[in-house]
Length: 317
Ligand SMILES: [Zn+2]
Image (cartoon, rainbow, N blue to C red; front, side, top):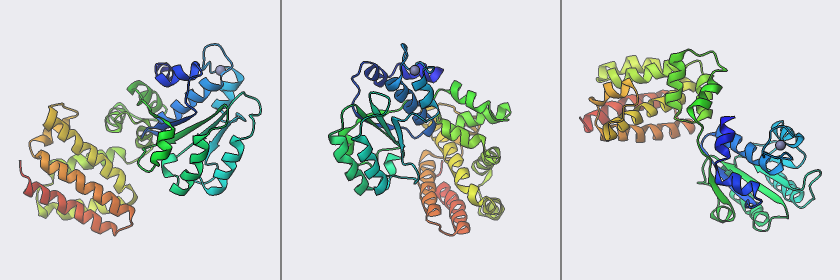
């Protein structure tokens, strides 16, 4: 319920209720959970037949809740991103009258992954949208979205989810207080990430490992011991590295602003300079890219461990 109250404070809500909403919107959030909730609230507001929109109780709202409203269409339907067949189908459908409602809504998921040529095909329809048709483009960022598309859309930065709501979602998992506290800290208001951590059996192990490396890893003679632990992570290495990166950013934050995020940031702060940590973050991001390109995993682990020692040596406290 709380996310609905928050949604109702958004300018987009006022415009939707007052019939002043732009016909094409680009909704942006790195949190897919927040993105999904915001979009659903907006679609309900546009379609709701009740008095206090979105009522959540009328048949329109309920159909939207179950994603089976005939005039709310979600794309892509089958593939991960829109392909040319689906674009053609979408454009064709946009020019057909709605079945039961007085408007039609197209929700286009993963808009940032749509191929440039496909975006160009979509552009014409966004430039001259059919009467009473709305296009809601969802994206985790707008880097790959054509400037021409962006200029046709109202760009909305979807607000992040409150801790209370994330905790409510986490209560559906069998987690102890320590795990909950850590997930809340490491997800940084990204509910999708919190859910990912909650369903990972390794989350707490990765947190401990990250702390162990930051606190205790200082000499090349320790490299083999740490490497033997990291080699075993395999598919979990990226999740571990993301946690490690968060820890580095917590220490940077503490060193720059004195904001103490967690115990480990306080403990480690005296052992690292800001320059060292900034370089660790930069190098880790390069390693994540290398991992995505399927580079040899053990080599990536070796580079990771060597890099930390080098950086500590090059930018001492
Ligand atoms: Zn309703």
